[in-house]
Length: 154
Image 1 (cartoon, rainbow, N blue to C red):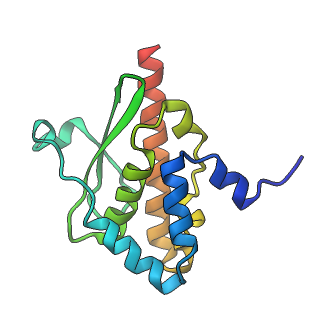
Image 2 (image 1 turned 180 degrees about the vertical axis):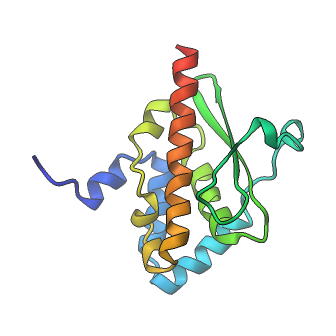
């Protein structure tokens, strides 16, 4: 059985996410945290129809911040909506990377994406293990919601 290399894992990501990963891998560890904070400003606000609807969203309890996720399947492509306080730039930045990197991906592309995207980004060199657990949980929840949606649509 062959060992999966970092490059193999990156290749399993949708092209937009691959581009973000390469951007982070070219940066020094201290610069990665700055990049992550910049991405936090790019996370879109919840659409008006989801505002005040946290009870219809799934909370990601492993994150230190209050993180709520809603996933939809539109014309065979997945859309994500996250409600994360602006005071939590680490998880907001990672969520923004996932939203941008997985935007328009198919369920199969998302399921193929490795769960350790944070490692591919080099974030394990920039943030604490406790925060990494929350980041890991975020993509696990995303993939689980996509799996449920895809099964319900089939």
